[in-house]
Image (cartoon, rainbow, N blue to C red; front, side, top):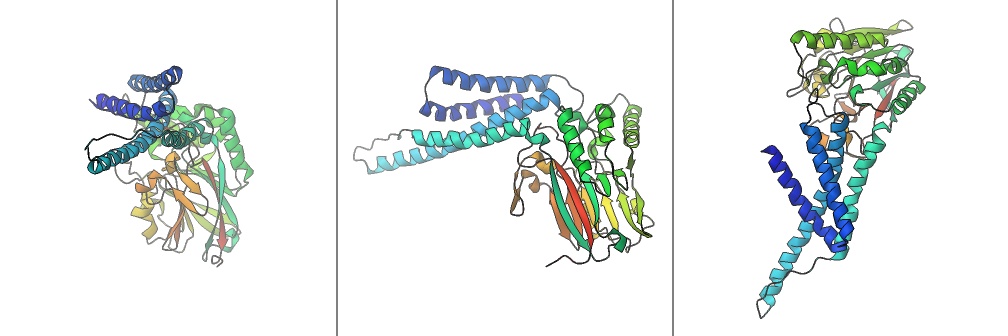
Length: 408
């Protein structure tokens, strides 16, 4: 029934969107090409969706089928909305003419070619954006730099720089050269420490096998630290037994170690400089709603005092809203990921930032401050489901810690 509803919906907007093309051109081959592309995209999506695959995550050919369908749907929905708006005007205009006409005849004004051309031009923007996002945007790595000020930062850590990446989702990668560029870009920042905030894979630990050597090249003076994300627990795949699922998680933990990453599982590590210390705290995943809730902030911070300077790694930013930001132990800076910025949105740095994901997560991309405590939500290094990024680019966060008050 769901497939029937979806196909009917697709065909309805197909017919309506065609009105714009018909107004502009009735060339036989143009019409054939228009419908051939639409049917090919729809048929491919249905075929890929009905083909059995491991796990419930959209990847590979399924992901591309979804991406092409999304681009076509956006194009046609925008056409439909504009054509519908014109029809409302046409019906209203025809009704008004009937009221004023002595003969009382009703006739619809013809569609305007200019409006159909304008509709095609407007609809082409998201179509081109999505296709560009699939072709280039998913590997369009950006380094975002932030400077945060803390009065109680230990003197020895004034100017301390950390790099954060998140949501690698290695099972989605398909271009070693592009991924290597991202890893090299990270190393070029030469930060004091590198942290990874969860979701190394989509489903299985084996997804990381082709990439272990490359990501093992990530280096920093004080090491590389990591935590688990919701996808790392294997919850989005049917396993042959609970033991097989546990073995997968154990293998993934070993993968972190094999790459030289120090995995923090509801625990903390003290970083020392010139006799002074800051605490790096890592919790397992905790997410609102139906997401995995293995994170234990109290356990991870056991033995630390309110006065200790703390940087916390927590994959899902909803934990910051739920507990971290108001915890009596005073977590100065939290580093999260998870949202990907939905891989789709509009950003004008320093001016404007929008994505549909903001209606689900209060903290979804970039730096936020409450109660004098900060969270950075990294937009993610990789991608998931939709094999692309539009306006929300893959990110390497570089945060410099400074002692003192923020300049006015």
